[in-house]
Length: 319
Ligand SMILES: Nc1ncnc2c1ncn2[C@@H]1O[C@H](COP(=O)(O)OP(=O)(O)OP(=O)(O)O)[C@@H](O)[C@H]1O
Ligand SMILES: [Mg+2]
Image (cartoon, protein in one colour):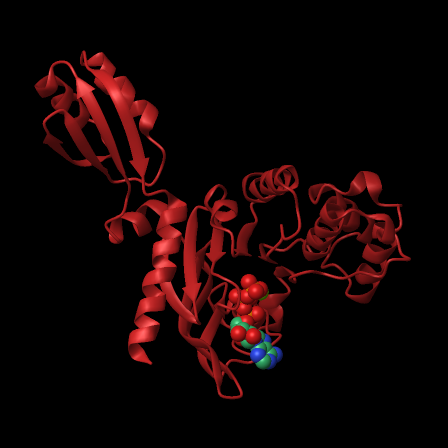
């Protein structure tokens, strides 16, 4: 698959503070790519450099296979991208439709009828029904949707969303995730989605890149990241019944890496970070076992925390 974004060796300092330190990221066409990191990790800085809104001190940005480092370096490539900034602000006296007409007049959508482009963007972003209301009357969720509509106006092949669900409640976040999936599945748009919340990103992303203190921490699918760290997850079960048969049945499960038994306490190491407790219990019960207790962990949340804590320790050691 073609990489629509390929960024390598990005370094950026603000005064003596190094916000990015040799950071690299690549995003495959047709995927939703999660860009995860705690506050201040360097996500927004990276996205601004990709969008040409900021120059790196060193490193290279390639968009759609073309070198696009720096402002002007990739203007034609950037016209194929849409960008939703973190916490977008819009004039409160305008309606969504007026705002979109303003943008569309300002930068004419490529080879397309303006009205159709605006209608499509408002519709895909899920804001069409409220397009005539003043933006000042919108809820936080509606403003985020307008931010997405604005990013979609020029029918981009790639959208870059910087913390799009900041301030949304859980239901709003779930709806927004659905919208993002639709972008990928129905519209064929590649999505780069930044967030500091793991659970927001893991549910929707095909791949994830983790950044901390300007450095690459991990990249890949959640399962790959988990197994690389040796924390793909484990299930601990206490079983009564025919132990040998139970062990054989568990070992046959495709996602099981290894099985250890200590009396009737079985520890199952998993090659996945997904929750597979129901599959494990079905296999045990089918083999005639009776489950006395079952625990699983670490969760992806634990994994993310341990990635961050390990980085913290390295940092301390270095200083
Ligand atoms: N224009 C600037 N001048 C000085 N320091 C900056 C500037 N922009 C960013 N920084 C610093 O660089 C670091 C990375 O900032 P960045 O905004 O990229 O982080 P982030 O990962 O987007 O964080 P958040 O999750 O809080 O949005 C932070 O320490 C920030 O204070
Ligand atoms: Mg940010």
